[in-house]
Length: 382
Image 1 (tube, rainbow, N blue to C red):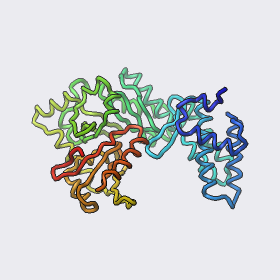
Image 2 (image 1 turned 180 degrees about the horizontal axis):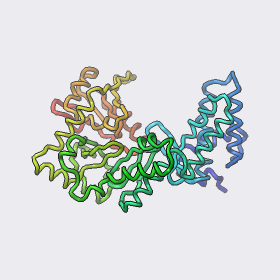
Image 3 (image 1 turned 120 degrees about the vertical axis):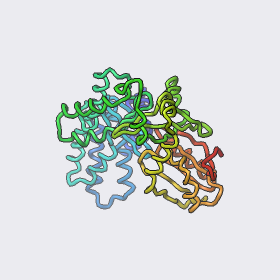
Image 4 (image 1 turned 60 degrees about the vertical axis):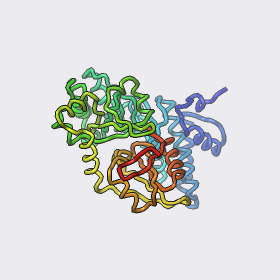
């Protein structure tokens, strides 16, 4: 007979094994609900008052106890494990997100560990009911979509970052910050204003070039993204870069961005504009202060670009990239863009390939593990 953890299926992600490890150390019985939380609270209290506890013990309780807490909440409110790069969360209820590992860590550092744990669990319960600080903003945005009759539905989410149908990306953090001390009516009003700016409200003609030119940026996309769009992928402006990687163009606004349509790009060109060239210029202007990290490994130097501004993979297109990398690396230079927020470069293709495969496997929206080679005129498939 399966137990409650097994019954959650693939919604547990890697949390199932960690939760079982925690239960095994606390007696082996696969308890659930309030009994499981009781074991977590006991472990936190013991560790918080044990001055001889090692860092490894602290890490085990945070990772394994956090995993069990996450699964208890998933079972109660529905949801699943979610991962963004190295960050793990649980999506609970229809709109909520919670960090169970951060909850355990905060409790261990608190003057009153038990009370801090209870406080974090109350926040999680509010998220599960759609009333927490993240959930209420996502809920308001979702209702605003429905009210305006727009067909964009939330395909994926991680905390306050949403992906809608058609490749539209929304960041609700500004709304959350601006309405943190305000009531739900204020949140709903802010969400309505943002939804009013989505493509369905712009009309079929799309964005005029005068408004688009300063907002246009390149974005690299891979096969998995195009498969997700299905037939709608043909609506986007796409240029093949090599292997399974394509270049799309994005229009970026405050708190949201969307992909430029083929018909929009054609119209801009007919008006005499050079959309792709302008997108590269805008990217270069946003990259003036970008600094890549050079990491020494046993196989040689590895350059890592991961600024978190959502443009790191697109920097593969910068005409000055080869010159920048050549300051640290010998020719030939190999590159990879495993996902939106990472670009890798090294003189050893095997080194790049290995790190690209690892980063891609951990990414919620991977681009490609394929290798490119830097040349005087840009990049080419390796």
